[in-house]
Image 1 (cartoon, rainbow, N blue to C red):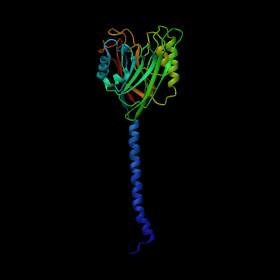
Image 2 (spheres, helix red, strand yellow):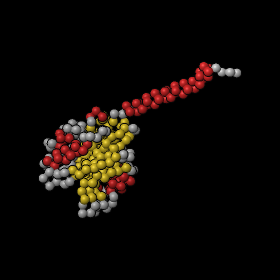
Image 3 (cartoon, rainbow, N blue to C red):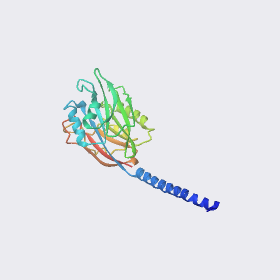
Image 4 (cartoon, rainbow, N blue to C red):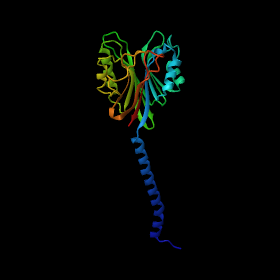
Length: 274
């Protein structure tokens, strides 16, 4: 039986049209799923903790506090590595003890034996990491560090940062360090959460200076006190974030039950990333 050219074309187009329509429907569905994934909120549980070099009760006690909280990511300050107090690779060891296998050490000072700085612990891979040394004013304060990492949870990427600002009563060094931090992060393309001991004593200019960029999870006058343990008198440990519209604060609280392991209480903040 002979098939005319017009019939042949008609028969050949049918499977082609079927393939094209199927591909179009799959593409629309995939785009819809992707858009839905991008638009949904992702919860991230964060923690900041000045551990006082674990000198009060040791590394195991600090690890137990972190495990009880079970955060996604942690900022630790006053971390000593390979020193007389902590004769081990402290970041590596506490990552193993907590099960948070991704970690980053932001070096601040080289000591006579070992070194000192801040640490990021994470349940999720650290896609990028960077740290800088922070300068000091003419007040005899110590060199500090600011470190940050890019993380991704359930399709949402964000930066998590750690620092410990100068301790002198005068604000000069802290204000200098804040300027250096803001200069470092101003061009980052993703939202950021900073977990830190900001040494923000009452009536200092620390928090107003940081609020040029960051938002606070609570009003400074109403935030729970964090230092010293066991009877705190002011707030200096914070989890702050930017930009404001990228986050919702779901929960924010000082962990007053952890009153023996360090001279600071840990702070836990749970955020929804939009």
